[in-house]
Image 1 (tube, rainbow, N blue to C red):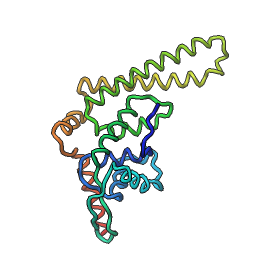
Image 2: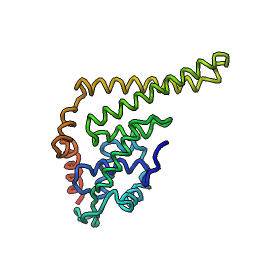
Image 3: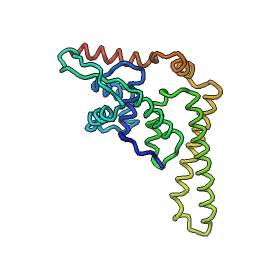
Image 4: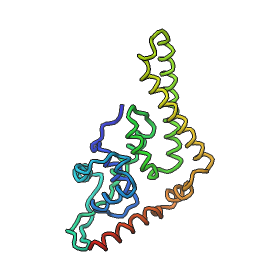
Length: 219
């Protein structure tokens, strides 16, 4: 059973992930980065609930306000940073989404979009758990189809589809694990170095710098 989260909207996953590097961000910049990195599609973001999610994250102690600042002619904005409780919630939530297959692939896609906040070795372990769960589901579904040999196929077509989707996902996860194990995944060295030595990935710096330049131009 999926755990009931204090803030269960998947937008929260993206907000917490963006705050992991440690630099305080105000909601406008968080929203800009979510859009710039494609998270509004990965997490099916409904922007009308964005500020409510941020407020709820603060209410439950996952983020905290650290400063207020003004950029150009924009009104003063409060910036937020992630708390220890927020980091723990992010890791636990990601682990659940990665290891446990669900009928809806959306949460897994959302987790994949911010997977870099976990160390590579931890991701490998979680993906191995997911693959074992997928293989178990595939075996059970094949048994279901086998037991229905006397049933007209039209009544089991949705089971065939579910089996095909799980087989395709298992093949993809198995391939990804192979790349991680062999070290052939692009960006793996930088990913590992980030978690071993700290700092922020250069790609995040570039995104933040670009957003700052846009803010300065608008100001």
